[in-house]
Image 1 (tube, rainbow, N blue to C red):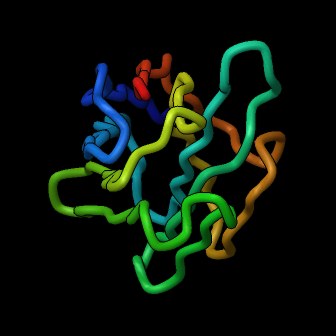
Image 2 (image 1 turned 180 degrees about the horizontal axis):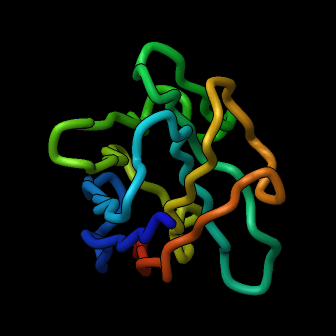
Length: 124
């Protein structure tokens, strides 16, 4: 079983930065793909970024490429999402997710474990 807890959300002005963290605990974190998703107000959940267990493979949705960076620290069992040049349209609840896999998936239904989410609000 894997437990995920997100932190680092908050209110920031457009153009600012935030760093989200996802602390992973449980018996078996090894071999897990880690993903970040978000749910904007009144909209469906959407893929943001993912990183493979090795850290060598990453994937980003187009709207965040060049602004967001996903990384992981396998020794501290943490995953990060560095978000720069934030825009009002990035406002959402951000979720960390995990799936035991060597491949990178971008669909929410493919992930088995989810955190409770952390709110990010970007003011214009």
